[in-house]
Length: 200
Image (cartoon, rainbow, N blue to C red; front, side):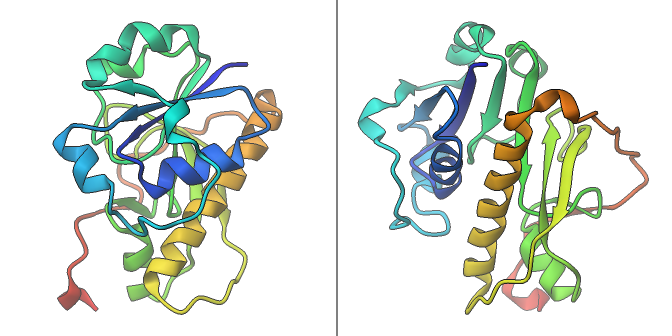
């Protein structure tokens, strides 16, 4: 099985997923120059330690450049910073695109699910789902509450949720045929927007 991790800028999400999937055959595609890449570079924790060697990544400038390359991969993973994908890109990998969402779907779709869950005094966790044209609306493969961990900040909790999502991706790729996609219903859950400081 061939896996592509696609990331915009050397952001923490792609680095976590690359580390977690080091036992599987994967290629990291990296956008280094777009506006999104420059913004993603400093997201969450630019000094997060990982084993990802950026010099070994396949560099791309526009996501459309990936369309033909991804046809030789079984799955592509959203490694952070990509935004909403168009249908022709979504259909490029043989089995589809996966997202490791740092929140429980369908309850916490959209932006900053960790912050919104903490604000609502709700559980945090991660969901691995297939990507469709919506925002976190694709069929769910694995959804799991994160085991309780001590954290000093919301940022630290956010990182732990991505690490938890990386573990769920490992579980999935260990035996993909065990997981049946479960469609989400549009009326379930909530689409959350950008979390602002005043929202606490």
